[in-house]
Length: 362
Image 1 (cartoon, rainbow, N blue to C red):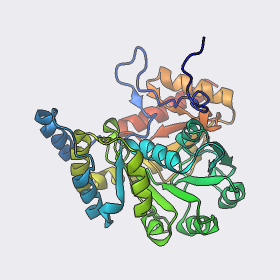
Image 2: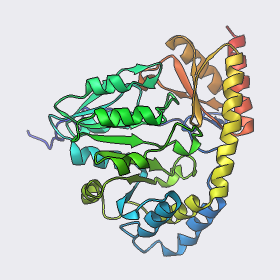
Image 3: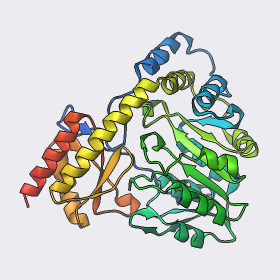
């Protein structure tokens, strides 16, 4: 008997596996698995969220107009060229749905964000992973992977889980090397953490070229991961295509209100950056001092290498026994590494103490 069957590609896509947040038998573990802001959300954002509790019977603003205006004001961008979504994940999905399908290709760097590959498969498109060099996006490899069927190229900059980045000259070289019909998506989820003179999130490239999109998120520096809120900046025709595919009320009123308050609370953002700058350096130098590899990172996380997959698994199990939840990145073809979020001062010390304990068992 015939049964309803999903279209080709849907059942071929792997499920996204998020970082763990609980450990059995441990009430308050150090949750360092999801690159969340250890300082939490802005108090202003929490207040805005609470203020909306009496209006839960009202539909949200379908265009997220006030939120887009706030994003535009803070970043000096035209709000008419901004789109908001339920996390940048949704915006990735909208872009791939709009520009790729069966017979098309979506190119990304080998250790790039998992949703590029997963979403491409669900649309029937073919994901193409370009090799990296020193755990960094390789522009030449990306350009070599682009072929007649390529419709989109995704670059996470900085990249998760490696923590590395491309400077502006390399990003420009990539864009100028692409065919004009290929959409280059600069996924800058961790941009606010980067303090390098040769880096920009990508808005300038959107203004300079017709085939560039910049994606951003409220899940990281703004501490609003639970609300699922992201935004993108692109040419008007790209935004128009995405708007035709998104749900009419894709961003909740609570998320919009909290987002407006969060992006205007520059003091909280500055304190989050200051904390990360201090403890990213401390974690990197301290863990390297233990004899472990730590990949250079400009994000709010580090990638710790253990040499081989078995040793990495043992280390992960030991960390969990000490109440520290790291993120295994075998799904990113990096089975010998663990990713650790820069946590609170207490959590940073917990992770180092746990690593010392593991090394003492060897």
